[in-house]
Length: 377
Image 1 (cartoon, rainbow, N blue to C red):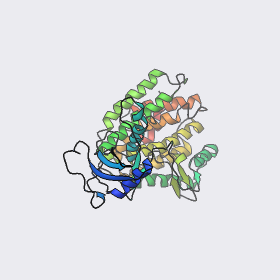
Image 2 (image 1 turned 180 degrees about the horizontal axis):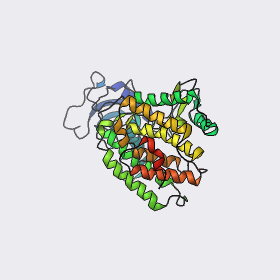
Image 3 (image 1 turned 90 degrees about the vertical axis):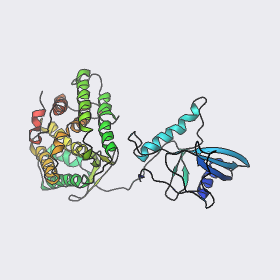
Image 4 (image 1 turned 135 degrees about the vertical axis):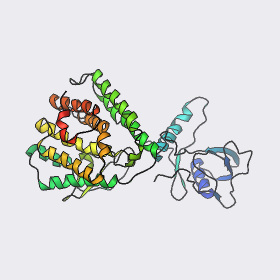
């Protein structure tokens, strides 16, 4: 769970002593806790009742403790969440602290790190110092990935009623989750910055393209990157658009069961962002599949593309998204055009996708009904 800025934790003396005793393998008695830099100038935090009532995040504390009758001084530090400098999510702060623990002791004359740990809900401190790798354990969910529906449509080119119902349900889902807004403007700025500069996003995708793709040279990729940087400066001002997002809403992260009952998988890159991220991640696949089947956006995939967009726009009234979605479509276009991710894609389809990317970046407002006009030079 994300904590709020300014939140304090009730750190109990008993819990602190339990943690330190486990770390040192000896009985530890904590005798004093005080803020770094003020330990000789102020009264220590009250330990009489067993709680460190003054403990706050982002402030280092000096702990004086007896370990086997030897007095030692230790420093317990955390990171503040606010500021918009990449510390926004608890996972950001965890990554920084894990790195510090691994790196401090490698540098000559640097203070040593004894451990890295985490606070848990009951106020306990858990050690992570011996961890080599982290994992996530989730529930198992039955179902078939949505891309199997698209595979069938590409093969048989016959639209069923269930296909339109599922398309509308997927659009409705975004309508619902995007209703939840946030005023943390720095998170919108961050998300737009990551759209361009993150290793999983535009620049990371461009760096992954082989030197000789046969369809895109260095000058062409540089031009795409330059256009995206210009879009970043335009979009970063639109912080009023910050909303709850999935972040990787594509057909391989959606599991359908019977009818329109589905579960989403692998939410990515934070809770908050630009709604256009989710829209582009899914709708670019209707274009992608249609290009493979027909060489243009037409037939069953055009029907689904138009249905998805119309349903979303009608129910949200978010016409502004048509002037925001361009770099997100470019990013997702770079994914499906990638020689790394899709090595067997025909040259013709890859060229049209790259045309789409460059043309879409050069338009001020997406014309949903004229997508085919973006496929040619």
